[in-house]
Length: 539
Ligand SMILES: *[C@@H]1O[C@H](CO)[C@@H](O)[C@H](O)[C@H]1NC(C)=O
Ligand SMILES: *[C@@H]1O[C@H](CO)[C@@H](O)[C@H](O)[C@H]1NC(C)=O
Ligand SMILES: *[C@@H]1O[C@H](CO)[C@@H](O)[C@H](O)[C@H]1NC(C)=O
Ligand SMILES: *[C@@H]1O[C@H](CO)[C@@H](O)[C@H](O)[C@H]1NC(C)=O
Ligand SMILES: *[C@@H]1O[C@H](CO)[C@@H](O)[C@H](O)[C@H]1NC(C)=O
Image (cartoon, rainbow, N blue to C red):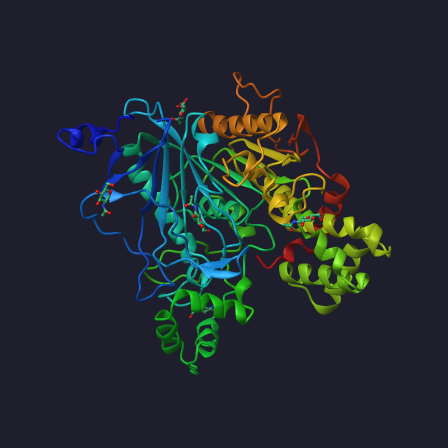
């Protein structure tokens, strides 16, 4: 049995002495010990509370637990649409955190802490073990923490008024970070050795905490997997009419925001989420640039591209992307009936969403991109080019543009990577049944960092090697700020990107090696594109 300071005291005379017990600031929590005694899991601890009067805004503190809180259930998730089942699931009482403590951690041997922020486009997903299982990481001597935050309308409604300023989901995350700082020592974690990491919207979230200025001291290193605040899908303009439209759909015709809000606040979150989807509003609830109100702190008070120039925290960073990010959209591109027309639309929509251009400028920009990626070829030979465009615009170029900012303003090292392994645990490929496609798609690396519960066949030898390498690099970075310290068994030395970027990056595949300038022709195109249009980004 693992030793927590409180457990020893409470155990005297207690019947359930074998359960791991930890005293948090809100009272005692009881976890579960794994069968082999190697991991203590504390599941679903409430870290904050949604205000039922105003579920779209900042969170409240949780009350002191009555008696011992049984932290044994991580099935609670925030309201959202379930992709696979096409139903609405989740409850508002969802601000829960999971802590996984491996054998060996003790009050005299505090372990480094890795805090995961899940992805899902700010509207989907959750933190539970079936996707983010702890075993691979924690057996390498770190404590893993995962948590839920509000999504969709509840996390990202923004009305440009002080009672709903926006970014509530990010405020939830900040609460979780504060909870960890205050409580992790009781779990034998080192509160001065915290790495924040995340994927996709989770990675962009990690970065918002670097840039917000509120998180100083709450974490010390960061890993951003396939997502940065410079990605085109991260931000939106606030839609202050959202409550009125939702209320109307749900049966109340009003032009008064307060009435509308009061009305929809009382509805079952399932109905509100369904309404959001039915009126085509799913994508509109995103992080926004906040207006500053008296007595309300801001999470994001300027365009991300501006925030990056005046970065508040200098910390070691790993940032990267996957080799075939948007290969996941292959069926979408294959199915487009009139290829040139739909390609034009795709280019135009993407550019228009990220850049503020006049009509003529937009035409010119679209043509530039189209000529570069597809010329005037026939669809079948160029579906690949569409995927390259989509990957570059959506993930790859933002990551490079971003690491260029960082190497200029961040005095700490920046490690860049491209994950390119295709095995049996590529998460997205398996999920989308695209296992025959080459390379690594968006989210594919997650299966090599987390012990996901849904694989039925045994891992191949190569899969095991990739898991070993990925988790070594990630946990060594958490421990030493260096993914490949001298003692590493990973067969290469991953050195940081230089100030004058040659974009030194690690290729993480069945071979690991350093390379320079990923996709250099495509990236050179975007560099040129940004010389002309870079000052006109919306965010
Ligand atoms: C917590 O778990 C213990 C042991 O299984 C049980 O006796 C107790 O009733 C549970 N408490 C609550 C509040 O469910
Ligand atoms: C994780 O969440 C899903 C809901 O998306 C639930 O069905 C499943 O039981 C949860 N897994 C665990 C291990 O609690
Ligand atoms: C938000 O409100 C402020 C003050 O009421 C106003 O100056 C600002 O233009 C508004 N912003 C948006 C995006 O509506
Ligand atoms: C996955 O694709 C294969 C081959 O196209 C097909 O036979 C199979 O039914 C698909 N499985 C699912 C779950 O869609
Ligand atoms: C973080 O933890 C590792 C492993 O325990 C240790 O070697 C390192 O010195 C710690 N770093 C800091 C800043 O405390």
